[in-house]
Amino acid sequence: MSLRLKEHRSGEVAELITRLQRQANELFTGTGVKVDITGITALFVDMLELVLKSQIKSLILVSVAILIVFFAVFRSLGIGLLSIVPNMLPIAAIFGIMGYLKIPLDVSTAMVSSVCFGIAVDDTIHFLHRYRLYLKKGMDVVEAVQCTIRSVGEALIKTSMILTFGFGVLLFGYFMPTVFFGTLLCTGIITALLCDLFLLPALLVLFNRKGGRMSTKAA
Image (tube, rainbow, N blue to C red; front, side, top):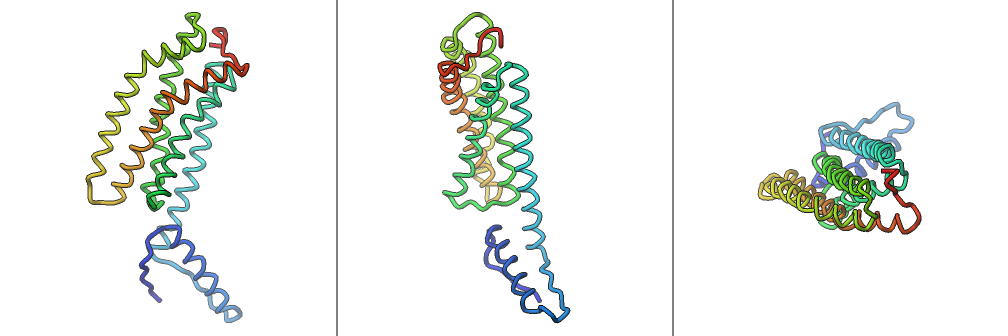
């Protein structure tokens, strides 16, 4: 039996396949007949599920790895945890935009989070590396943050804008998965830039005032 579907959203298709499989099993219970739902659509849904699971595992492993690296460099668990926040918010923004614009979750959009995470981490490492150098010069946290923003802020803005305009070209295409990919990635890049320029400095100052001071010895 062959069926044609009008629905293309992966979540709805997966729910439909599950419901059809359950109804078929109930219908042929005790007859010895086994029903398997196959085809390109079913294969695509299974492949997407595997991609999503692998993406979740990858994000968790990368977050743990980044936490360990920052802890090893700064000798501070708090700084390691702070570094995760500005890198996870862009991913949250991506999924928020997907929900608001009703962008379907497929193989292309599922890959955006990993790409965005890698770009966001680069900016965070750049920022914290320069911040660490200013601390080693004897500056306090507030002064070190201010000097870091003045010294690397322009570079972060320029590189982020270049990436945004580069991937923004995808928005003018006709292949919708590519358009969605470009839209979400540009959103993530801009969000990562704002987090590194505004949220991360605020977290560093707040962390210092709450007693988690990152001294020059730790740097």
